Length: 265
Image: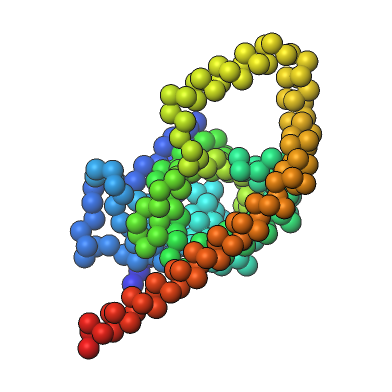
């Protein structure tokens, strides 16, 4: 089965590479890089297949690959859990700024981050690309979400902004900004929260400046309070709660298997 190559778009000032605007019939769908080119829930919108196809100028390496090829390979290797080839796409001085972390991740922490990510994804969770926007080389942004067996997982949308090595060969990723969808949806209250915060900043400008200059340091008293007075009580409870539901899930699985075999016989 022949994989359809990911075509690199012409480079303009800023452009958007959107998926094809028609649905593929089942007989024309191709399994590429462990992902089906299945349609999203949006009407007449088909996901771009994520694959590990090398660029047309590649000869086993990435010296001739374009920026879009590198990012395509990046998600393909994540989905295929190929940590060795994934690390080849990351520059030695690469940093990751994830809005789930207070500080940027250095190269050592980044490698641990991606290995952990591939581990928690398991064999059925995959990245699906919704939209790619390429700017002046070497920058590119990707809108994505996670799927389990082709089904969209709620609250897993995200946007990643990549800065690559420019004209240096081979082309590798030097910096990543990751923005993830929050499961908490304050809706209209988000503006009220912003209003409250700005009023507090205006009322206490000195405290506000100190907090904004070193937000992590300002949080340390609360971290210590949690560590000494909350963590000793809540962690054992959470551990017990987690073990209880894990045991219950295993028990339920055994019961369902027994029922299935009984009905099958």
